[in-house]
Each structure stands twice: as C-alpha cells, then as structure tokens.
Length: 267
Length: 307
Image (tube, rainbow over all chains, first blue to last red; front, side):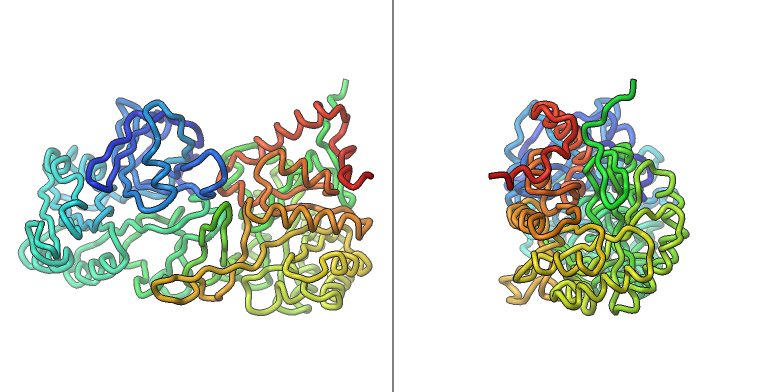
C-alpha cells in the first residue's frame, strides 16, 4: 500500500529544458504533490492524452519545491514516451499521479552519507541531499557516467555542499574507471554511516556487495517498467533475498534496503 | 421522488448500480482504486484471480508495452483463498458494490474446492470461473480451449456452489460461440469475455523471447476490436448475459460493447493507466444514455444486431 493517498490530476508545465545533450528536466506546478513528496518517491506521467503510448512513465523526483509548489523530474530521451514528454511546452497541462512509492529512509544515523549514482541514477539525489544538508550532515556522491554528455546535476549538488566525484571509463571524470571501482577505493579511505545507490542493475549489484563487505548499510532506488505504479498490476517485481517471493517496486519500493534484494535475477 | 438511475442493470440475479465492473487482475482487491473514486459507482468488483494455494507469480520480466497495448505475464500472483477471505473480504464487504470472486485452478478438483470454500462466505456475490489465464503452466487457458473441458469445469463448479456463476472465456480459440454455448448448457449464469490475447516479444539483442514463459497476455486498446467482435458473436450464440471486456478505455468503447450485446462491461488496463477511468466512463455513459433518449442503458443492449 502507498503511504498516503496519491494525488491524480493535471499539472501545468513550468519549465522543460535540456540540461545536457540528451537529458532534460521537466518542472510541473502541482502544490499537492510538492507538499506531500519525499526524496526517493516518484511520479507517474502520461506522455499522451491518448492511449498510445499506453502506459505512464515513472520518474524519480529530482526537485521538490514546497514554497513554489513545484516538482521536477530528470529524464533522458530514450523512446516514444520520453520524446513526447520532451515536446511538452510551457503552460501545457500534464496528467500525473504522485507522490508514489516509499522514499529514502533518512531516520538512520547518516552524519556522513555516501551516494553512488550511475547515469540517470543521479536523479533522486538532489532532494535527498537537501534533507541531509538541512541537518548539517555531510554527503559524498560517486557519480559514474559513460561520457561527458551524460553529466548532469554536478554543480547543483556541489552548491548544497555535496562532494561530487565523477567516474568514467572514457576518462572524462575525476576517476578513470567504473564508479564501482571508485567506490571500492573510497570505502578503503573513508568511513560512512549510510549509503544510497541508484543506477543500472549491474552497478547496484556490485555496489551492494562492496557496501555489505564494508558493513555500510545501503538503500537502493530501483527502476522497472510499470503498468500502473499503484500496486494494481503486480508487474514491477524484483526477487527478495529470502529467495521465496517478490518485492513490488512501485509500492514496496522504489527504495529498498540492498540486503533485502536479490540482484542475481536476470530480466 | 426516487431518482432514476439510467445505468442500473441486473445480471445473473445481481442488481448492479451501473454496467461498469472491474476486469479481474487489473484492480487487485480494490483497495488501491478506492483511494481514487467511490467504488459504489461500480456495478461489481471483480477481484484478482484467486487460487487454492498462494502463488508468488512468474519470475523475470512481467510487462511489455506494445502499440496501444500491454503484454503481461504476472502468473496469477495471489495470496490464496484462505488469506483472501481473511485479509481482503472484510474490506470488500464494506464497499457498496457486489463482489465477484475470480477463481482459477490447476486441476478440476481445485476449481471444485474453491467453489465449495467460497460458497458460504459472506459478501461473495458471484463466482467468475477463469478458464482463460494464459500465464500459468497448467490449468487456466487449457480448460477454456475446448468445449468439453470448458463444460466439465462449469458443471463441476455448478455442483459445488449456489452462487451465480460467470465463466470467463479465452479469445485464443477457433470458435468462441461454440465454447460459449457449451458453458451455457453446463449451467453458467453469465459469460465474461475476453481474457487476454496470446502475444509475445523478442529481445533483438539477446535474440531470445523477453518473457520467461515465451508468451504473455495482450490487453489494452489494441485488442478492443477483437473483443468487440467476440462479444457480438457470443451475444448471438447464447441467451445468458454477457460481460464484455477487452481494451475498453472510454465511454464510447463501453457504449460499443453494450450495442454489441454486453449487459455489463469490464474496465481493466485503462484503470491501471488512469485510475479515474471508471468515473470518467460512468459520467460519459450516463450522458450518452440521456442523449440517446433512453430511460435505461439496457434499452441499447444488442441494438447493433437489429436489421
């Protein structure tokens, strides 16, 4: 079950801008969702008022601005849905549902947090960093990308005090190599109280192994195709580490404790 | 003066406040949708398919989006009949809509056991016998694929339950009218159709089918014309009422199914995409009835068959 009644309605486009060659940020005016939203939760947006493409597109909340009553999502144009969304114009009315799912658990000791982001997995970390910095907790973000064109958010995160270390196999980042190799090196040098990760499946799987070995509690934000985002379709599953049944990413997640997730599963 | 409800109808002895019902497997046990609209708007709540033992569902990818459609391979994930009765029925009993329980078995004996168990459960208004699930290895669609097997399951459930009996048919057959006649003769009080159409998708990089079970069930607007055609055919073939479903997303779609002969219509995939689909269709259908100059929507039932 969702933690509270999600809002389903129409929001006006406040901004829809390209922040990197293929990455966009869509900002919507939706005071109800902005007031209720927590970092790590998501919204489900209809790309078309028709039924083709059929399904809504789920996106992590990338900005939550209670004062302005707006929320933002960060997205990469990868298919028909996101292409249509990139065409949304200022003032256009957008059908969305949110906030959905369970966000990051921030009540644990988190004086010195570690974020591990891969590609678009950077999206949910800004609002999380805002919550942490409001409590004067420090955070380091290890951010892996394929190339410089994939970088987004770095200066924004730095503005609110996050130490960002980028990793890339093409040499465009601070660290030359995979973000998980950077993670292994970082865990040897510094102690963290809580870890958060979001990114591709293989990255999350390796991050879980490294953090568990370092005894660092880790929360992972998972991604899945969803038909509803509400718990109706039961389609967005990932196996529990108990080997018996499944998490439903939309309602049990999208954020789960890494130790509860079996990453050995293949899609 | 009593307000006349132009959408009120009856089906297999049940009074429905509207012809709109949830399509099984798309609304869980109605808790989620109850956060979006008053379930009293529904003629009935048809719950997610129940099996005797709990099922965790299928591994791997369960959903694939297709043009105006959705392929699913959920695999009848459900808590099992006992947990359904203890965990879900208390909530369902409080809703102002009859509850129709969809049942699915691996064997004939399991259908009989489910019918027996649910027969005296307070708040269960009817059974929908699922002989059409494409996503389980045994049972399911196998029972819906032949007139003999479909009739046997229907007869068996009839023997074990006093409840109104709806049989849900699979579209993955050569002669839908023959199956419909077979379950009518075997004692079904109503027929619902269609379940999903078999479909598949292939990952062109790995060169393998995306779904572990190779095939899944296609739903959504993409299948509406096929569903409408089958409802039209079955309406001509049987005397018992028909619940039409398959891709209904708008009130216009719902009106088409009623004109084809449906007494009630199931809203499924549309509710997953838009949880306000039911109230939107409800409103549109009401206005349509008024514009058509009928006192009750039932007057339009099967009108497309008139010469």
